[in-house]
Image (cartoon, rainbow over the protein chains, first blue to last red):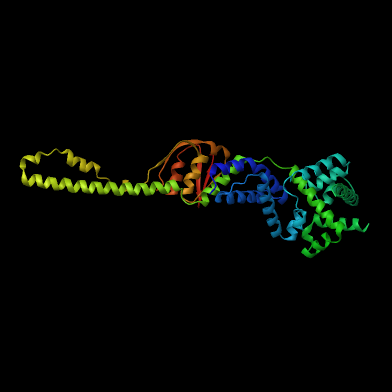
Length: 158
Length: 217
């Protein structure tokens, strides 16, 4: 059984990055908390003391993958989670860089109204119809701009 | 143009997946390689959005919650079990010693009264010692009370709760930091402990099955 003080140190040092990765990958705060707690409960029952942060982040990623695999396709799509889990996942040595780069790219290289449409769709979870009403635009034009934005990101990060 | 139509259909489906069957969803995403890649891009974009818009994380509260779960999963704490065993042994040894002493005293007393009347003035202290040291049965089997002195609720309650296989839920974070002097006997019923905790005016403690709920008044 891992010593409580060692466990607490590991927890305090790594919890923020672990929970942030789990939330990012799963899109659900409660599930993310479950995943990270499970990892520490398993550690508490064992004598294993991970030396590198990457081990714990890999454990988070693998647990998230397992959860996603068990979901129905509809549930994955509702949360915009990967449908083909294996090849899609990023390595965990630098898991946060790609997320940051996408956000920087959107703010730097997208013009209005593309940027607003993009934020409404992915940050505010609005439908195209709701965005069109909010920005007083034609829904077809809204679709067109959103497709252009996604294509721009896709070609940049290919 | 066909690609754009496929991507538009993908975006329409993502706005309302409930309107589609699982097979239709699968077909739309896998219509062609372009559409598949667009969906992957959307997944990455959504992750980036979640990562950017993260909320503040309270590590202390998360640790407390984990600590409670760990304690709830473990049976009664080893030191409490050890105390119980030690108390039982001490009780047995004490009883045996008293029984031997009693036999010895009674034997001497009989001898004294039958053989030499002059010794009937044996000091009363031996009799009184016999009376005083004879312990009541319940003081032998009872465990030592645990004294929490100036201890926060967040430290004290999980320890008490774990003995009963219960968990603790703080509905008010300020209550966690309140410090009390509290004497707890492990043989007390949990509802009696809760009753006594409620004598403190600054907290309201409720028992919901195996969960101790703490609120501020």
